[in-house]
Length: 151
Image (cartoon, rainbow, N blue to C red; front, side, top):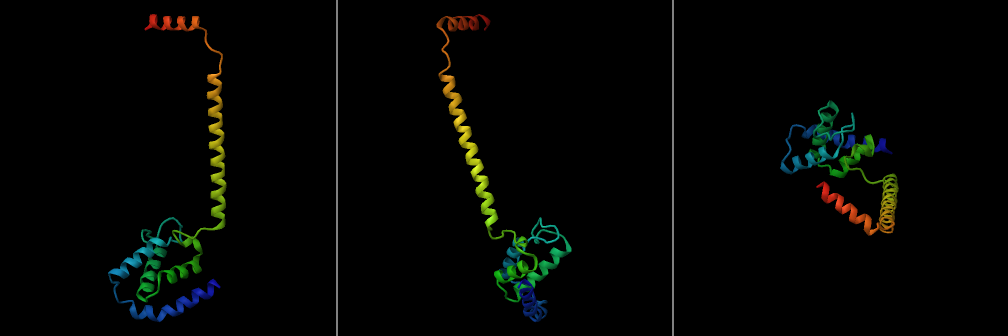
């Protein structure tokens, strides 16, 4: 299915791209192309958007994005083309998946359990400190006296 989408997109754009390759982008078109360039990750290393990546693959993709925008393709059509070619990983902000939610839920559960255990231990240690055997008045007088003499 992905292959069919890629072939269809390339076929539909080939004639239009050739005819409009000499035309420059207008203000709104430049903005769209720039937004798309920041929304797509360079497939050579998967670390940076194609807008800031200096590889030849990223530069080629920037040219393709420009041609797609000139051809009047929507943002969704352009993203779909690259998703069909490279998978969701090409998107800087891919749609959420069940695995992401599951991972976040498990992590959140562990964090909540840790906080509850920590809170209970703090309350327990505080209670034990309050109920510890009281110091006799004689010992307290002697401690006060010793600290006055040493200071």
